[in-house]
Image 1 (cartoon, rainbow, N blue to C red):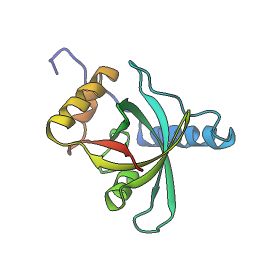
Image 2 (image 1 turned 45 degrees about the horizontal axis):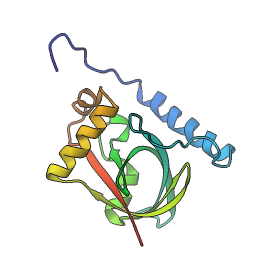
Image 3 (image 1 turned 120 degrees about the vertical axis):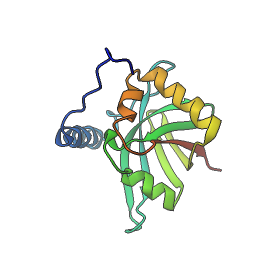
Image 4 (image 1 turned 90 degrees about the horizontal axis):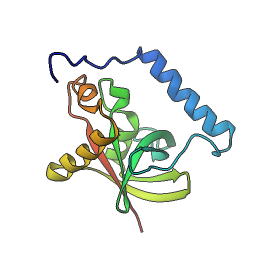
Length: 153
């Protein structure tokens, strides 16, 4: 980041959490007709991911941004750029099988963190979709996992 480039600013954590809750409420109240949208070549989409809780064994759902990479869906375990890993990612580390609802249907997927050259390639794709990505990522003390959701048979 250059000296003249300003560091990105995040809203207070409570604002981020309210936005997440409103987004989920829109999805729920509309029966899934609103709140999800397909990824486009220059814009990320929104999907609903359902994991199995690592401690409770109960289903847990979250709405995440994604883009498509061939048959795979790619997202980031960014926790709203806050510290720590998001619960959904910790659930997937414990049990990588999940269900994803997209604007055009449902898929059974298996999750893994991208590594090495694959992570760099996918990170570059995210950077093209979100020009502030590097600045936000630097706000975290740990590397943000790039999560690949691959189709299950």
